[in-house]
Image 1 (spheres, rainbow, N blue to C red):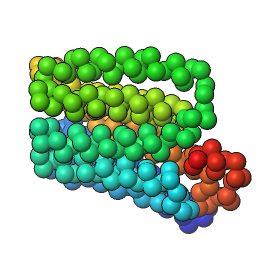
Image 2 (image 1 turned 180 degrees about the horizontal axis):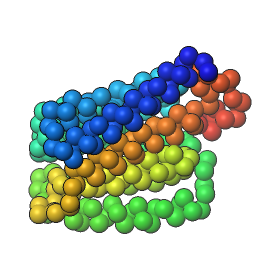
Image 3 (image 1 turned 45 degrees about the vertical axis):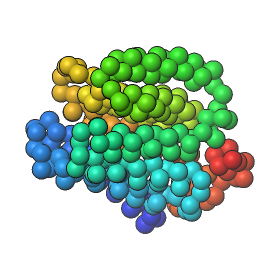
Length: 235
């Protein structure tokens, strides 16, 4: 196995390990361990992308930008966890939009009727989330609307990539929906919501990025694919 491939696999193993430790820390209310592990998640995904991508392309750059935004939400958001400070909500919204932009060309070439039909349930989730959280959002109502739309659009476009991006985008939708209810829905009582948010976020984020890596026209350890594949992903 080439060295870059071994490094790539090791990074994914580290991501899984840190993810499990973080979820256990959240469940055990081990605050120090939770704060130490959460900022490590996005950098590990950045390393996974960089060890796979042979060069910077549109898809790679947008994905890395999304991961940097997610890191800002994971790390800087801990300093001011109150969503009224906007750091975490805006950071995650930017991440969602960048992931959607990275996957948009592939979705445009994947007109599977079943995937197009997902607009209905995803749209229902977006509308339901907005209606449920609108009263508690106050002056942040425009942000809630943008966040809900960003979630739905990202999950819908991710469904047009491959099975990994499809499942990852859906888990992202679940995670962010629960998080939005925690932020903006007063009185919401979701048992172990913090655990569910982080478990689905870590799994969804990892699957989404793994799916994007799989869509790259070539990887460091494989020969470049045909020009037709490059047009599908990067046009």
